[in-house]
Length: 603
Ligand code: GDP
Ligand code: MG
Image 1 (cartoon, rainbow, N blue to C red):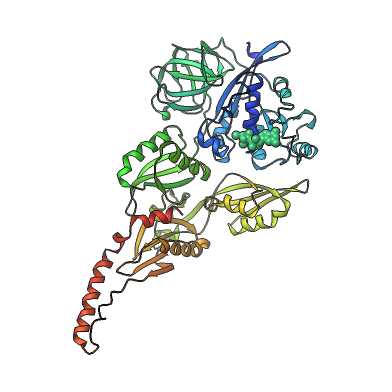
Image 2 (spheres, rainbow, N blue to C red; image 1 turned 60 degrees about the horizontal axis):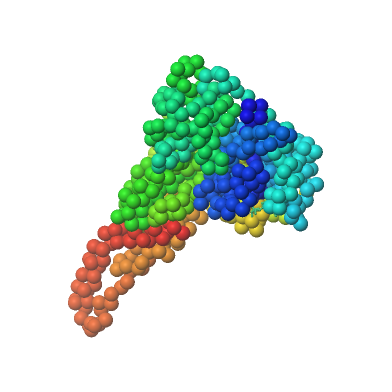
């Protein structure tokens, strides 16, 4: 098949609008999988992705399709639908010439449709509108056609109307892809120029690379070099996903496929996404691509094994997972309350919970995670900047240097869509979370698009859950980084018998201090057993106590058997008891079982 008959495309959609179902239909239609194949949703490979209906890693699948008597080689590159994985979405787009803009006929445009459209548009992708779920009684095709025209300026006459479920209209998609999406350009006679789009770790092959060949050809035995790392490799195998890894003799300019080396690439860190590869002899002749920006972690949690004797087992599981997800950052951590563990950085809160689920599902690791936190930026009086990721390392409120320093917290720009009837409640929620309204648009009077700037700290505090609660699940949310903003921030700590508990500490906006402090204290109290001595639980910012609870000691009734008259003996006994309590109190922190901290953190 010549390059003029290649097409590389992806599907841009809001979650649940039918991307996976439609992909399966297209694979069936081209005979790539059989219709009776019980293993549906070929592109959503990991269990957790299937379960949550999200795609985390970009996958690709090749199809052969005959159109008007000619064979076409079509690559469908699946892209993650979720906001936290924007960097991966951008990378997938870089290997495509166009995209299907898939919209659910009963839902219309939603937050992720809009944000992914803007990303795809910015990368010059040719867009083919596809309206799905036309079989549903609640489908309103004319309304959705009007939406795509007014908001995306796409011609409704180009739209393909389908039901991925019944298969109706699906046969018109690939002809539209062939006619509307340009073929890749590239010259297979030029030196090899290959872009690294994605990678994953395989126990047998080492790191497998998903690549887009722009120029030249690549085959097993070629000696190649990474222009990003300078490291040299010998190609072990090249191939395409059809739908599983299928070896090929060559990959040519314009193709998307996989490559692994022999000996295999050992570390996933050596596969720098956006890196350019060429052959050793052409190293000086090929200009590398600019590369992709490394995503920065924005949500941090600390993780500790529930049982310290499981430390090395859990450590293995975590490093296995990190091996496949370079966007997670990992450091060792120690907590007096919880023992040895790790600090992990994630792109966002969903990314964080996906990781947590994988840890449980794939490795059975039993891990306690602290509440998610976001970084804080300090500009000191002398102008120097510092970004503090670990709240425990943030200076105490009593630190004099803070008086002349400026503090900043990360903000996000959130796009929220919802039916109009919930608008009031959503605005209330955003305002209560320190949001600042940026834009309000009515789509066809029933659907509202609301744009708010929100502190990232509020977003990680289960904002999505609250939003769903306020709208009976009808709202959709997407967000992008909106930079640092100055704010009045302080370190809030939980104290037990005046000692800070290192695992429970956060940098928060002063307006949140009282609410959060009270919440911590009463929640922690629930989990602490009454003991022989008094336990004082406090939330504090520096010297200011924000909230306090006391757990009374059991009082051994040492006086019960005494005559009231025996005063000296009575006094002596009471003094003895007091001393005993003092001793216990002095070791108060240690007596609190680890289980209490674990219960507090696991909600
Ligand atoms: P994704 O999140 O975009 O990958 O969406 P899925 O393909 O997983 O589909 C989400 C849900 O919509 C599933 O329950 C599908 O069965 C259903 N669905 C997908 N396409 C259609 C369709 O054309 N009609 C109807 N009625 N349901 C559909
Ligand atoms: Mg899906």
